[in-house]
Length: 425
Image (tube, rainbow, N blue to C red; front, side, top):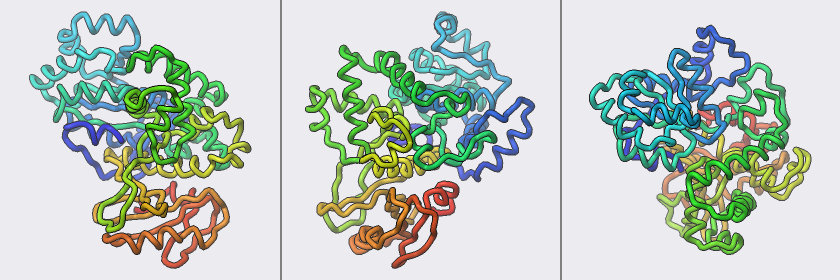
């Protein structure tokens, strides 16, 4: 799912509070902050820079990595390797540059692959914490280079687009309806700059196809790759069937697997793995496919507005993916891997989200309806019968606003859950 499961780097976990520490940090800064979102990863980045010689912050394009790093480390020189002159300057004498220009922030570090070997030598010679802050949006290249050269020397952190709590942290944000928020998505820039989200997402998709895809994989026909992305969006929230997607796209299953890996490495999609430990019954062991951002899926599916989304056939899967992604964002913001899964047996009985937190097992059914019915708790009760490891809690998350308990299953309004995820773990 992310860097933590792929890299043999030192594990780097922190127990961090909510936004309080970051709010204090903001008040201590002299620069104007009324247009910044308060990112929950901030405390972890600072702790990493105080502990490791190299800190790497990765995540999708436009998730706010550069904004966060410039804000947290305003005194450092900032270098963006997507700038041709900067790339040429550093590439002509990497060793000399690293010796003279540290501490510094190096953005899109994967653009200069040989940089990582020189970084290894530099930090081995002088391993003072906080020497280099790297960021990048191509996890496929970053993870390969870091695992080869900086294993044990670098803290690897992931910044996804805004969580709902982070969205609420912006002083100027207006209250949006659930469906408007899902339609607009969680990338920070459209909110900060008051951009038309349709135009922004269209540009984002084109930029990804024209720049990142050509860098990561030799796609001769971009139209085929674009069709593949649209087909994936149509299967958002469904059990992954690579053979079916490959056939519909007119490509081989090998190519489909490779392209899916590229989408995952670019933080556009993730594969939610099934939970099958401690179960005596047969369960599904194929992952489900999700996009991190609901706004992106809306554009790929041709959904025209929040009102259209509210009645669209995919609204249930979009709401489900939104809730699951919020849990992933929470764990990543703590510098932890996300222990999230789904559960489904061979008869089709399914729990949308399983969170394994230490010795606790938490189940969440996710419903896009605002009206509770007794059927909502049926699967949670069935899972309790099948699980050898007893559930610590079972909940139904829905779009209504009433809290209650029915047959020991908690009914949770989505907003109450997302504004206090730690309190429900």
